[in-house]
Length: 208
Image (cartoon, rainbow, N blue to C red):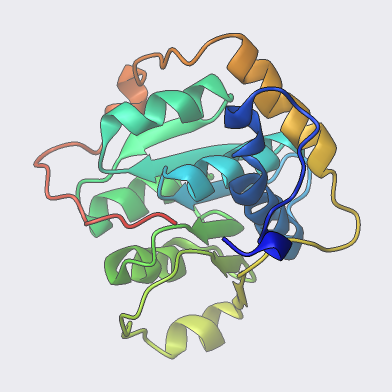
């Protein structure tokens, strides 16, 4: 590895230092999304980036719903104070997200998978004048109905790195440290969180 790609760390636990990259991207995504206290945010994908987005959004005191086909991942989201739902199919998840957010859809949806079905679901479930944030990376092409953007006046935002004004990465990192200090046990997903599960046809998540 090149010397200019190696940086000293100020913590003894290498596992905590390893969180710097995913958390910085999560904080950037929340900053780009302009998430505010009390807003309802749906995060598609519960990999390292999705969990980091959840953590940063909860730090801003937003209500968060995390979606993933792997139920074992969702326990971590619940431990951060989020609600969770197992991905079954797009229609079920979209309906559940709309109901969870009051009927019109969530004002903010973050896709942390890069999977076409999830990206389409993000656009479809977002409320009018909502923000859809694309964090998941992919080489896939996604077919989207143009009317979804003009009729709902959606903002589509991309995220590829960390940084930005007004960020509080140290505070978010401290929360991650506190959680690590409490142990990594993952509680089971509450019964309500399993609501849409009828038949399991999960998408292939590819969280960064």
